[in-house]
Length: 63
Image (cartoon, rainbow, N blue to C red; front, side, top):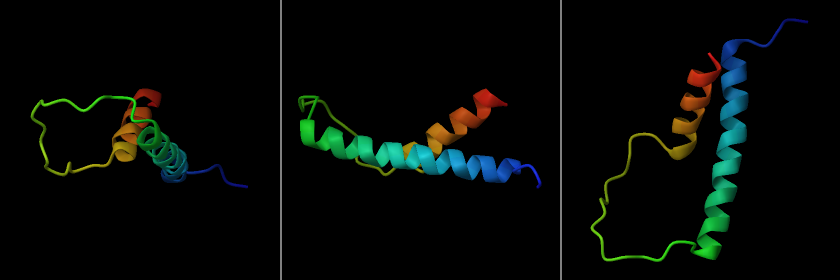
């Protein structure tokens, strides 16, 4: 059997990270751990979602 390719490993990491991020966001929304403040925040949507950024960081540090 062939060893998994780099692409397959990255996809596997991304799926696990994305599942974690989705579950974390759900739990965070329930608990409201941080108190909202009057500080100005940006309302622009970022180019990458959290799970994509985390996946890139994991791939970078494992390379």
